[in-house]
Image (cartoon, rainbow, N blue to C red; front, side, top):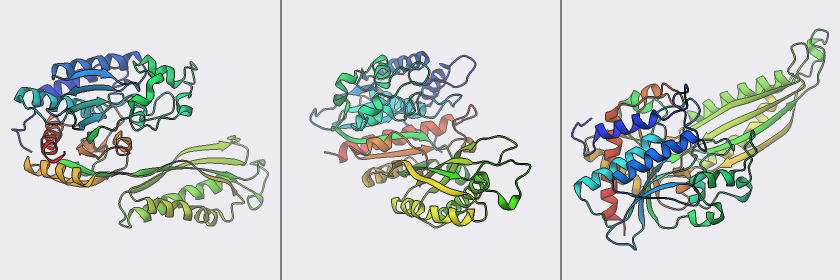
Length: 419
């Protein structure tokens, strides 16, 4: 990794660490969207944007935008985006590295006196993480025009506040939400920590993200019959939990088989499990499973879903249990990166003497929503042992500075390539 990158590594690192210190007391590193601490972080980000020569505003969806005008006002905008909110007890880099890297790019342009043909923006998207309203990527959904009236009426469980009022409280204006939708973006770029170990293990500097995997969540209900656990013979039981255990096993085996099949990224997880009546001395009568499946190729996901029910039925044979519900509760298609942007990011990486690796993202990001309305792409930087969404999340200063340098080089290349 080079040491003469065109980014002020020290300033970028100091900004990241200063933002991380704005955390709920006793909970490193927690700055959840819609909280007073989140607004403190936003104020810090806004100050850094202004110092980097960006004019700041909040759009109707509560996205914080720093803008630098270009030589040609009719040109579309080159955007670097990410988010500054965190999960509870999360890390110092998830999302924030992307926002502060964008500001570092703006600072470098300012210090060099560079004048772009295109307008340039850094966007801190509102509530990328799953929020207290049970919804993620709120700001980027709005930019894509895909934040629905039903979603705006979602209540916060404890206070009853609805999402539309919370967006207004963050400085947005839902009455004018349609104005947050963008049709003027020439290219959207995002930097993020990998949240996995591949770059570290393969000693690569930059991940060039080819796609954000589609996410399908399936709810499966398996029913049996409640009976006394001490008196009902084993061969007469209809044990819903025994059936569910067989289902979990076959889901894991089928996912492993598909992951090895060479069709890009694929994973499936049973992450939620509800047993009824959940008593030690009662044979379980009902189990609800939530399956989270992620695939880079849509056809591969469709095959998994179509073949899963008969696989589970065969695995449950002999347990006396049956499937009474099998439905998709959410189904988001993969978000593919723009081929031109991928090539530019790879060229920028190699021009800086860094090692690139093309790879898919198994996690969701704001880019997935921007890709609905504009050419979009992402880069990953390494994180220690692949750890993320934990206080131990870590990336080295030079790794993040290298990613910011790739973004800067890509912005300069795109400014000449795009009309």
